Image (cartoon, rainbow, N blue to C red):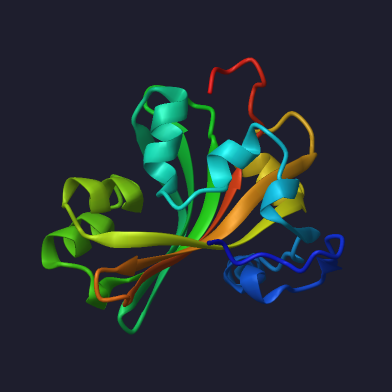
Length: 196
């Protein structure tokens, strides 16, 4: 179901192809890409495996886990022909602590007009918009990984200190299998006492 690495142990790559979107935003900040290693789905440790290794949108998954709606904060954005790219954090409503850092390329031309307008308003995460606007789509994870949090991720996720984080690269397709979005999602550390 999921595109994963071979059975060999994870390899750290300077610029993995599935990390190209992250590299684009890091290049704008004149930052080197953090150390990233691809993982097989079964090698993603709990509780991150339950939060990442599935074919659901991340927004409703996080909302179910934290039992609160997710809010979005856009850190940077850019437009290109037919697409809108942004760097974001997600956090539970009413809380300051981010629970996810992400970079996303949204194919505006493939979205219905109302969903496209809501994306550009920058008030809700894409997963919430697709759900509330009833846009048929498929979530298709392409890679799972661990990443060494650098100064940028440490700052935007408000971490006390750098550490190992886990994430995935995911693509969203519409009912005709046209690309809706390409996203790289990195989770903040999860409290192991949080019920799953």
